[in-house]
Structure formats: structure tokens, C-alpha cells
Image 1 (spheres, each protein chain N blue to C red):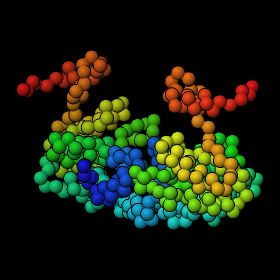
Image 2: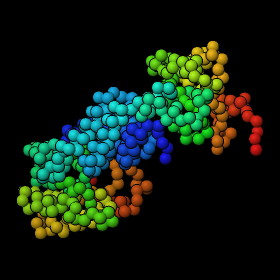
Image 3: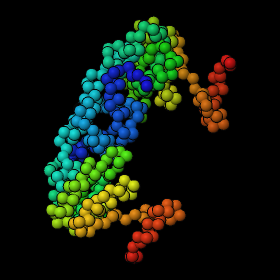
Image 4: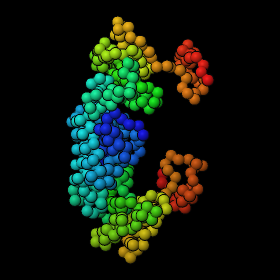
Length: 202
Length: 202
């Protein structure tokens, strides 16, 4: 590992390269960029991170990241509070919000069941989902987890947990991506998209 | 631009995405990584950056980044203080140090002359180089700037400035990269490598 002529630089590069996907060369580039900027810039950067870490909250209801006890989505009266979409993490909320096709609420699990990574049902916000379903007036729960073994396992676990409530459960559609060509689609996806075909609307 | 459910998150992502090569998606990924870590981790990260920015110094002699007034290279008595290698920036010092082929000192210009970017000779450490040559016992100055129009211009400017001193001036060799094939090398490089051929040593 190359040694810099400054321990201070060394430490800053070391901290930066702990971030995912940031190697030492990238870290050095970022640090030297900060070094060229003003003291105020660096202080504002550092302060934004520390303040966020200290003050950020998670919505009491859906566990989405929030500045208040109830997030802006949960507290928005225009949204359909009878539909709850179960997602893995905060990025998934952003991704679905960006489609502008969904007006219900969310429930952020904080991951999926993955015994390999030591993540069990108790590490996720599943109990709180069951509680929400029993207490709030919810008509439909949409499962929007990744289409992986872990995602499927979690879907199954949640469906068993919600079975007694008799609530309507649905999963987001799997099929060929818009713009994709049929011949290059994998068999599982293509198979699912045939089985789950929808009425033609022109 | 997508809006996050938290202003604190928004601000942290905004600050991160000011860094070169970091878009908003990458910034969000990095911020969420910090958010998963401990408060201490984030504070250490922030503190390392602010401390570096506040306390870092530049060597009085060669203008390399340093924790002390004289950098570790300039103060190393084992190095050959009669040879000075002129480089553009700190990364270039690291790159040459990594080769372990050079034992002289450096002189970091802080850039190259580039009228397009508003960088003139007075913005660079050229005067201090001329002063070093006149005061210190230096036998050779090696120009190791980029092989660009700006680099060549700077080389020429420095050579004119040092002309009176009668010092030995050299430039690093341009030629085919080690491992490169002849037929894919551009004409200018290939031409230079023929003109500047070196005696064959087996």
C-alpha cells in the first residue's frame, strides 16, 4: 500500500476508501478535490453527514427515513391509506415513488430473510406489519420484494403471517421489461409473463 | 430531481454528489452506507476530513503535501538533493515514488500553464523553482509534466526561465508503453521512440 507524505491525507483517504465501491485511488481523488475547495465547503460536507446521522428518524408507521415521527408519505392525507406496499429498503420507496403510479402507503422491512447473512424474521419489520394490518384499516398488501430466493422466502413468510387476517395479498408483476426483446429474455421470466398475461388494452 | 422523504438525507446526498464523478445515485448509496454504520464511524469520517483540511501543510521547499514545514522527502538525507523532478501535482509525486526508480527531490508546480483555464505562470510554483535552482546546489532538473500542449508550453516556459542558470535540463522519456504492441501505437509516440532510441542493454 502506498504511503502518502502526510498522515492527515493518509487518514482521510483511509476513511473515504471504507465506503462501498471507493478504492484508494478514487478516495485520493475525492480527498484532493476537497483539499482544493474552501474550508467552509469541507465543514459543510462533514456537518451535513454528522447532522444527518444524529438527527435522522425512521417513520413510526412505515419505517421509511424521515425528519419527523411520521414520514411525509404516511402523513399525506391525499394518499390511499388502505393499500400498503411492502418493500425491502428506502431506495425501493424512491424507485416506486419515481414511477408516479402508486398512491398508497409503504412498509419498509429493512431487508429480506437471509439465513446465509444471519438475517431472520425478527431482524425485519415484519411484526410491525402484522400489527399495522390488524390495527389500521388496510384492504390490500402489495409485496414488492426482489425476485430472489430470499425475496420469495420473505414473501412466503409474510403471507403465512397475514393468512389469519384474510387480507388481500398481491405481488408486483414479473415479466419482460418494457423495451426488451422476447428472444433474449430468460425462460423463467418469459414463462411467468405468459402465465400471468393481462387483458389486452389498446 | 427526485425528492427524498428527509431533508437531512437530501442535504447529505447533495453534498456528496458535489464530489467529482459522484452522481446522485452513488451519493445516495454512500450516504445510506454511512447511515447503517455507527455514529462514531460517521463522526470519525467527518472529523478526518475537517482536520485534514485545517491542519494540512505544503512543504516549504517542494510544495508537496505534508504534515510538517519540510516534507518527508525533502528532509530525507538519503535522497539525492542535487536532482529535482518537476511535476504537476501530488498524485504525480506518488506515481513516481511508486516506481522506486527515483531518489532525487521534487518540485510540485500545482498545475500547468493553461490560458484556456486562466492558469498563468504566476499561479504556479515556477518562481520558487527558479529560486531553488539559484540558491540550492542542484545539478539537474527533470521535467515530468504531461505530454499535452499545456505540459509542453510549461516545459518551454521553465526552460527559458532556467536558461541563464546553465543547469542541466531533461525531460522524461516518451515512447511505447511497456507491454504495448508496435502496430497499435500512435505515430507521434512511435516517431519519438525511434528518434530517442537508447543503447541496447541485455
